[in-house]
Length: 189
Image (cartoon, rainbow, N blue to C red; front, side, top):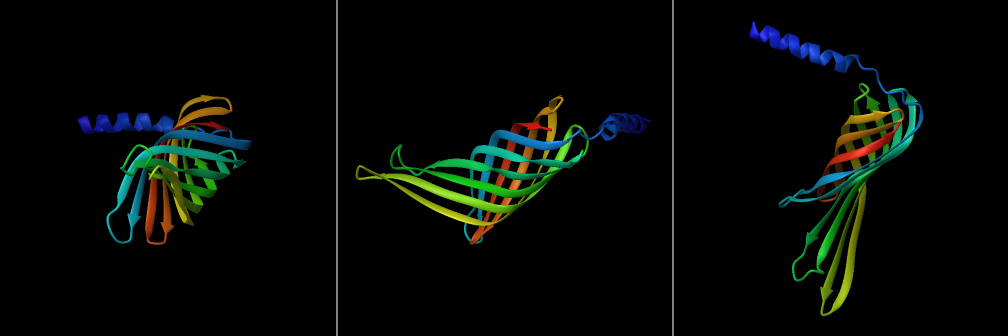
C-alpha cells in the first residue's frame, strides 16, 4: 500500500513537469553565465591534475523552432596556480570550447545542449627571476565536444535566469582536458 501511494505521489508530481510547454523562443537569443569551474588535465601518460576556478558560458544565435535554438557558444574554465618562489610566480590556465551548438528545451523550465567545435587551451606563466618579470605562454587548438543542461529559476517574458551545468572535453596531443562548469546565467528568449 505504501509503495502504491509513493508511486502515485511521484507520478502526480511528475505530470506537471511533462505537461509544461516549451518556451516561446522566437528569433534571436543570447545567454551569459558565470560560476564555479573545475579544470582537469588528463595526460595519456602520467598523473592527472585538477584545478578550481571560474566558469564562463556565452552564446548567441536564433530559434529555428519554439523549442530549438542554433547558437555559437563559448564556454569553459579559467584557473590560476601558484608556481612557488614568490607572489609573482603564477600560471593561468584557460580552456574554452568554441563552436556551433544546439539548445533543445524539454519544457519551459529545462533545456539540454550540445556543442562541437574547437577546444582552445592557453597556459600563461608570469615568472619573476633576478628582478625581471617574464611571461611565457603556450596555446593549442584541437577538436572539442561539450554538453550541458540548464534549469530556469525565474522567467519574465523574454528573460530567464537559469542554473546550468556543462562538460567540455578537448582532445589534444598528449591527452585530454575536461572543464566542468556550474553557472548561474541569463538568457533572452
